[in-house]
Amino acid sequence: QVQLVESGGGLVQAGDSLRLSCAASGRTFSSYAMGWFRQAPGKEREFVAAGKFYADSVQGRFTISRDNADNTLYLQMNNLKPEDTAVYYCAATLSPYTDPRNGLEYDYWGQGTQVTVSS
Image (cartoon, rainbow, N blue to C red; front, side, top):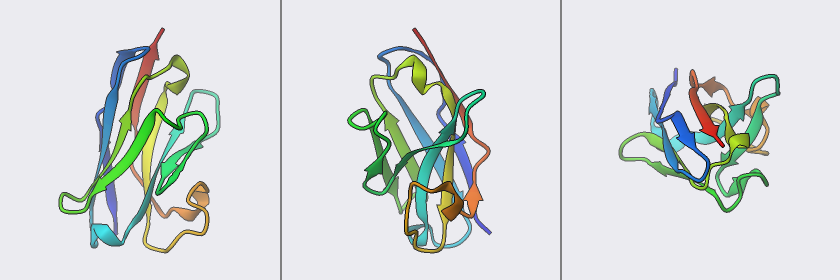
């Protein structure tokens, strides 16, 4: 069983930065394929970043990284915009994914962390 716990969300102003963390437990972290997703109020969950892939809306502003020694996945978010407001989730799978942008390929999800960007 894999447990994921996100942290680092908060209320910021447009143009600010935040770094989200996702602490993973369970089996060997380095064997997980992982990604970030988000869900805004009234909207469907959407892909943010995984591996080399980024959503067009965050390309050039967000950076995904991982520290296998600390079992942690990160999402560095710069130049935040009000439209980035959402609950952010990290997700993991022990199987190699064919499309990291597809949330259905992930087996484990965290509880989410709220990011609110004011204009």
